[in-house]
Amino acid sequence: MNTNKPLVNRIANSGLVNIDLEQLLSTDPIAILDIKNFLFMEMILKEKDFRNDLDNHDWTQYQNKTLLVQCSVDAIIPKWAFMLVAVKAEEYVKDVFVGTENQYYFVDLLRTLSQIDYAQYQDKRIIVKGCGKREVDAAAYLEIAKCLKPYAKSIMYGEACSTVPIFKKPRS
Image (tube, rainbow, N blue to C red):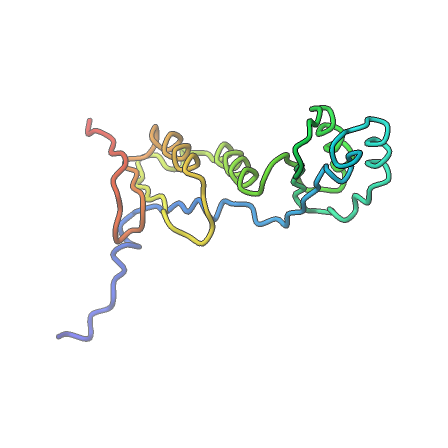
């Protein structure tokens, strides 16, 4: 065996472009605001009391965080209440969202995907990484495939050592 041959990383030299959707997930700190704490008997939203409570709420605790607005009790919350929370929180938070963490990460990832210039992937062979430490919604994989298809030479899913073919541009 010839030990003088340098090691060659064939995957690195293959021209494959890796996209890791997990790397596009927000890493911003998250805080939760439960509207139930602003409800009369944790059931009823009284407009005057709600507005007063929001005015007196310490919004600085959410400084530079993503604020998730939720209601952990079964109560009817008018849509304007969420608008009011957004207006009150806006000057303190990095982002404000109604829903769960998973819902937020999904919507934020779709927002990030919509800002990518996919022309940079023209005629490239793309691998969309499949596994990671954080959960990525299946709809995000659908979205990236739709966005890449007009540009990519091929799209694969998985790791460079084991991919599943998704799309291959027909030869012209």
